[in-house]
Length: 342
Ligand SMILES: Cc1cc2nc3c(=O)[nH]c(=O)nc-3n(C[C@H](O)[C@H](O)[C@H](O)COP(=O)(O)OP(=O)(O)OC[C@H]3O[C@@H](n4cnc5c(N)ncnc54)[C@H](O)[C@@H]3O)c2cc1C
Ligand code: SF4
Image 1 (cartoon, protein in one colour):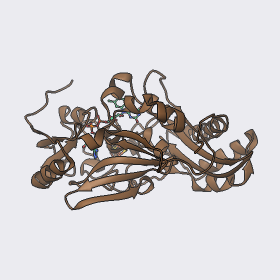
Image 2: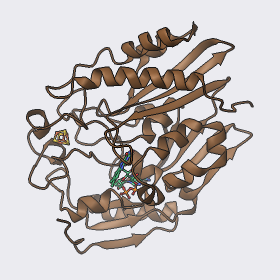
Image 3: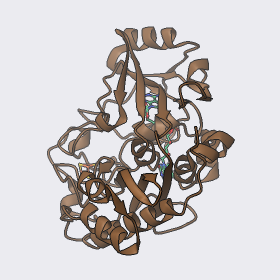
Image 4: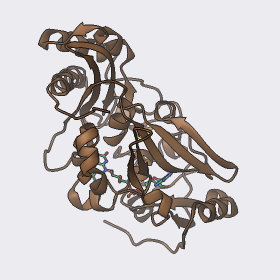
């Protein structure tokens, strides 16, 4: 049953400065909101706990002009994606389809068109777990400030990890994060003390942390900067899910290959749906370096990518599934005709 939204204060920030000072003024009582597709569900369902206080003030950052920019800078060879750009805008952008097809492929696999029309890039990166114990008010799990993880002894066959296991065993739900990470993206973050830039590689926290990202209560994402790969690059995103109409990932892989003729000179391989954070498969990337990729090389690399995973009682099948999506993503990237010319 969906409950009504409790009485809350709501403030529309019209600039980054205003959002900063509102966050500084309200402190931990406030949360930023963009599309609301994640946050409002949690509020309606009264999901809270000692480490997850119910917000009293929502600060809407969705209309701040700098956060709605989607622009390719030809001189810097870099794509700037404002945090409040919607997933549909990103998916449908002609320049994104042409130069960064990986991003549009990942976007189009997220949720439903209705959710993509409203859900934003910043919200997708900062969404909370979609673990059914977390989203049920009857369970006070570790992420809300409770003692342990209900999923370990409960049902965990689908949206849970096989890798990077700690206290929390949810698998990170974002499809966009592996794609942006595989492209070496950087985040611009605002806080009351100023702005900073950080590689997306360093944004997500581990499975022993209550929060999924490094963001403090007064911080928010302003934009994601995506560099154009230095040399001819090919890329693909592959996602496996139970229902093709809409579903979270059981396993996904984002792959970027830098090529010199038929030789792969470098790569980035990031797995989704398999760990509590987007998981970069560094050993597999090393294995691809200076190789001529064929089906056999792709299969062995994919096995390496999934190699260190262990799995839980009910989800060991995801070890094989992880290897399949990585193999398919490597082969799909090889066949990709993206125009990366400078
Ligand atoms: C039915 C359903 C299916 C879904 N399926 C998928 C799927 O297959 N793949 C997938 O990747 N996702 C999926 N999602 C998640 C969806 O992509 C997110 O809900 C959406 O992207 C969140 O964006 P939003 O703008 O609505 O975020 P909001 O709900 O506004 O915010 C979400 C969280 O992010 C924080 N936040 C928002 N913007 C910022 C910012 N700029 N800086 C810092 N913090 C911020 C908020 O405080 C909040 O904690 C699904 C969601 C639903 C409801
Ligand atoms: S997997 Fe994480 S979010 Fe789910 S019950 Fe365990 S601690 Fe909570």
